[in-house]
Structure formats: structure tokens, C-alpha cells
Image (tube, rainbow over all chains, first blue to last red; front, side, top):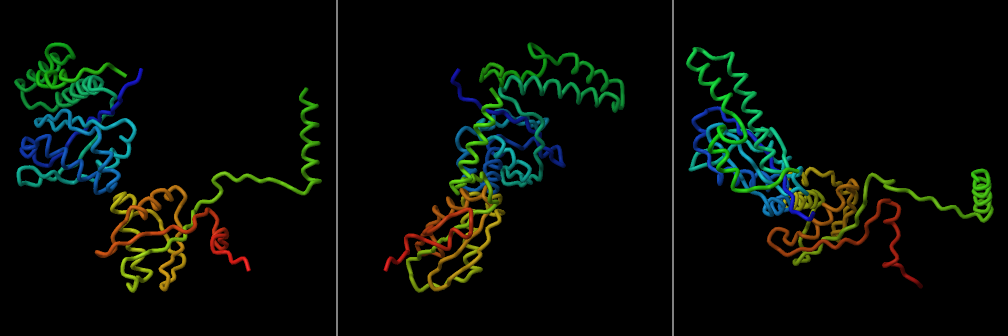
Length: 167
Length: 137
């Protein structure tokens, strides 16, 4: 009945060079988001960001990141994300932009969306396959996508650390 | 039932007309709010021009509310350099942001400063009179 509610933003980090993506880590992303919010919304935004903000999940291979914001001010903090132009990580500046795919009330709803989104992306990649081997690999990946068992092992491990029932 | 209540309303209106008193309530009528503020500095003899004041107010907004706050349309309508008193205009939805950022600003070029807000009103005409400065003789 009385519960602390958050909003989880499912964002995709687009970089021009795919190898740079592997160098990202969650502290660099969280520092970048905090700096962008402080620039766009000043001390007020920085204070809102410090309450319950964190990077819940980061997949360096696909560039998917889950950001958690408090429910009362997530729109304000969301509006600062388009102003991010680069991420600074281990001494290098990686130019990128954030693309928000989904807003969910819990990690589980975001995970369900992510699985559907990934299957759609794989379906889109299928006609572009250059040879039979790739086609077979993609078809196997699509068939093994599901919420329980199979699917993305790493995704499940990370997300089971916080259980929140659907909203 | 309805007819009788209508008659009562009309009767009531006639009564109001005859007594010569009419009450008009305006909600959110004014798009702007006007503030009279005075800048009080540690060193009394500092000169602050109107342009300096405008940049100072914008920097106050920027430090508390960021770029979005600094983009607020604050206008300095009148400025008196002797007393450092200014008349500001701001859209009504930005009044709280402006007032809070003026309140929380403590330094002007390395000297302590304070903004005293003397009058606030949604109507400019209301700022002409001030019962605090009224001389009663």
C-alpha cells in the first residue's frame, strides 16, 4: 500500500565505433548523467539526482542501460539525457548519444520489453544475413529467447538481484 | 424547484447592483509577476550597472536551476544605481524559481551580498504604492 516507487528508464547508448562500447562501465555512465543533470538543471537537479538515482544494469555489448530515477521527478531528469554528447571513461572521451526506449515501473517490465525488443531486432537482422551459418545462428538465438530459462543468462543474473512486483 | 432558485438568484443580483458593490475574482489573470528588489552589498560604494545586474541575476538562476533556469525571461524594467533598487518582471510560472535563486545567492564578485525583496505583485500598478514607506503627516 505504502511503497517507495521508482521509474526505470531503458536507454540505448549509441556510439559511432562499436569497439568503444566495450570500454563503458556503470560508474562512467552514472557520472556522465549526473554531470549532465547538474549542467541542465543546476543545483536543484543535482540534488534530485542524488536521492535514488543509480545505473541498475549496463550491457557493454549492446549498449543497453537501465537507469533508476525517483517517480516524482523522473521527467525532469529524463529531459537532461538528450544533452549528453560524450562519456568520459578511463581517460578517453567517447562521443555518444542516449536513446530512451522504454519507461517502466519495475525492472521486470523493462526486462520483458527488452526481450521483445531484442527479438524484433533479430528478426530485422535476419534478411540481412550474408550466409547460411549466420542465419542459423540468429534463428537459434530467436528461438531461445524467453523470460524463464534460456534467453540472456547475464541479464537474468543481474536482474534477479532486485525483485519488485509488477505495477 | 429550478424556477424558484433562478428567481432567487436574480433577486440576489439585483440586491448587489443596488448596493453598488460588486466583487470580481480573477484567477491567474496576469501572465507576469513584478518584483521590486534591492541588492545589499558588503562594500557600499560598489558600482553595479544595469547590465551587470542582469548578468548577475542570470548567473544566480544558472547556479541553482541550470541552463533551463537561466533561460527564464527575466526583464529589468527600472534600475536605480544610487540605491541599487530594481524592478523585475518574470513570467508567473518562473516566479518561484527567480525568488528562490535570488534568496540563495550569497556572493557578488567575492563580497557578501543579499537581495532584499521589497514588493511582489502580479500587477505593476500595485508596486507604485507601499504602505511601509507611507508618511502619515
